Image (cartoon, rainbow, N blue to C red; front, side):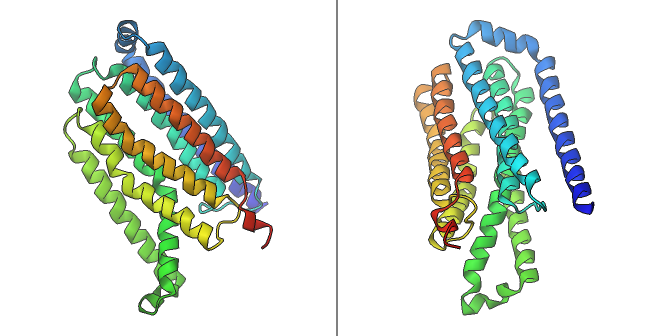
Amino acid sequence: MVLQKNKEIFLFFLLIGVILGIIAVVFLYAFNWSIIITSYQTHEGALGVILIIGIRIFIVSLMAIYTFYSWFKQEKQYFSDMPFLFGSFFLLLIFGKALDLFIDFSYLQLDEELLLPVIKVRYFIAIFDLLPMIFLSIYMILISLSVKERFNNLSNEKYLNKIRIQILIIIVVVEILIGIFVLNVQIAPIIYPIIIVPSLISIIWLFYFSWRNQRLSQVNTFILMIGFGLYLLSQISRPLVQILIGDSPSYVITAESIDIIISVFIFIGFYKKSKYFSTK
């Protein structure tokens, strides 16, 4: 009975968060609808941008629904569960893409003073999108260090969790401060993907370590290692490609198409279990 009540509480807050997020996005679009329409009418290829980002939002939405469904199917729910971590990743990505679409259509139409806060919100979503995975990767890093004599105090679970939270707070504060103090609309889309590179590297290391040491057997750590590696390459290449060919519809369509494939690849990594799962 208590477990059922906990599920209902988790589901309630999840739905409230999703509804509030949808309302915020709807209001953002509604208040700037004339700008969006003007941009749509004046930019060739705008329909393609809408379609590709819409397709990505739809696909990622299905992934989020499945992962959260898997989480709620469990007898007990913990925030460290892989379905919750991936569900959070996919859910925040949905809202991130909704903001990306808005930014694409308002970039040349909206005043910089109004657009920059939206870009910053998008950046903060990117930070929190990776946060659950980073939290897990910090744990794995500390676990790997705990076997060494000089770090044997990390074998104390309470102390380890304290250090893990402190490291996470430092990472978040640094990334948020960088985001706050970026004052230029032109440079922000280039700097922001680069800033999250260390976070992605830590996530890749997480799945590499898990694959080598046969951990996290409920997911396919090898596929996830490759998937997030491709995601890292995608984020690194975006600013470079943007500089070379500009922020044109063809660039957006190409980049989003590649990221759809990567997202599906990551989802497959979540869906499939590691080969060493059956041996445990």
